[in-house]
Structures are given as C-alpha cells and as structure tokens.
Image (cartoon, rainbow, N blue to C red; front, side, top):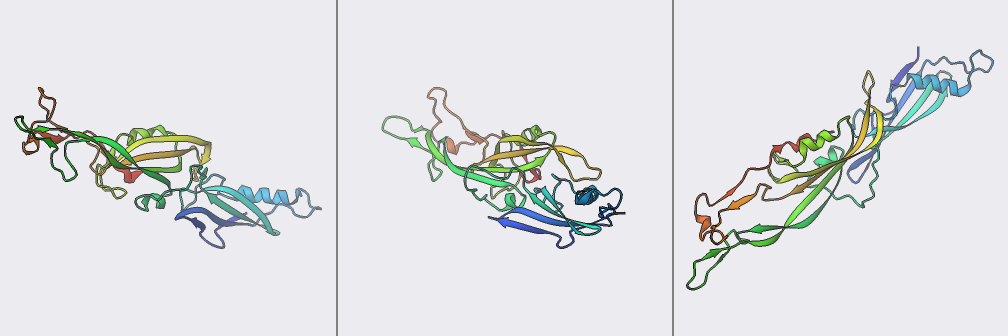
Length: 279
C-alpha cells in the first residue's frame, strides 16, 4: 500500500522579505506505488498514471494552510517520478492575493502585527478638535478691564496615526469581524498605545476564493476572504471631554478647571481585546 513521507529533506524552509515571511516550501515522498510502468503490462497508463496514483495518496490539497505559518496556503504542487515506485512532490506555500498596489508598506508601531502574518500599512495625519486648554494644560481665558474673565475654546489640529492590518482569512462569516471590532477601543496596551487610545475605524473584506480546504481531517471547505482592519490612534483616548458652559454666554464659566464637576471625560466607547484579532 502506498505510503506518504512528509518533509523528507527539511521540515521548514521559507523566504523572508522586509520582516515578512513571503513563501515556504515542503517536500513529500510517496512510496510503494503499484501503477504499471512497463508499456507491456496491462493497465499501463504512462507516467501520468503513476503521478495520478501518487496524487491520490498526497494528503495536502491546494489551498491548504501551512502547518507552521497559518497565513500561508498551498499554491502549487510539483510532482517528479524519482524511482519505479516513488514520486516526489514539491509544495510551495504563499499568502493568497498578497500583492498590494498601494506602494511600500509602512512598519507598525511594534512587530506584533507582522509576526501574526498581517500585511501592515499606515499613515500619520492631522485632525481638528476643540480644546479649552493650551499646550501646558492651562485654561484658555480672556481677561480685560470692567468685564468678567471669559473661558473660551479654540480649534486645534492634533496628530493622529492610522494603522491598516490586512490578511487572508478562512471564514464563512466575514461580517462578524465588523460587529466585534468597529467603533470599539483597545482594552489593554496594544501597538504601543495605552488602553482606550486605539479605535477600530472599519473592517473591509473581499472574497478571493469561494471554497478553500481548511487542511483538517476530515477535510472541509470554507470561503477565503481578504480582510482589512483599520485603526486610528489618539494619545488622549477617544472618549469625549465635556465642560460646563454658562447658558447665558454659551462659554465655560471662569475658573471652570478649579470646580469639581465642571468638566469630565464621558465613558462612551466599549473596549475589547485587539490582541485577539483572527489568525
């Protein structure tokens, strides 16, 4: 009876580029094959018959996940007859639909995302917000003769960071990722930011294969999606700050920062673990 011998020359070989594993290879040997190889024998079907017999023994289907790098999938299987009863298979694993057209990839705040197999991009930008305090944290106030001191707010452009993490994921319910993460903030330190400073801005997904082997036993087939998670970073957190304003003037009361209860941070955004992003 034919036998499959896995990884006969090396257990894992891989190609790394820019900190990301781009490709891995495995070698399988199928022995004990019995398809006739002599043209004079009944049932002779040429080399194609021998390879077909070996392919029926090989347990790894195209689209199967790599056993070590779960973000790589079997892209090709090359068969070579090396003896009268032996066929060798060279398997190549790559990320499916890995190529991006948006230019160079920007490194994340830490290497965690890359290690988990995500393709990472990002940007730093300015976003306008209202503030009642200056750079040193002092209240912004107008003081002039014969009038009470008036506290005011001013618009200011604040630095924000955006992080996009993208990978191929086997799932039958890609929309559930949006329900889990969008509009929520991190519940613990993540990508160098304290709890509450990263907010998930959106989850996009595109189907790239309607039926891919999950590599299990028994084998089942699941749709493969390219999923993009977009996050934004605010060092002050995303919960809004509120300040009491005098209903007659529409401005904060003078010395509001010295009054307990005149300002507060409102707990709005639910916090979840971003460290549990799907692999």
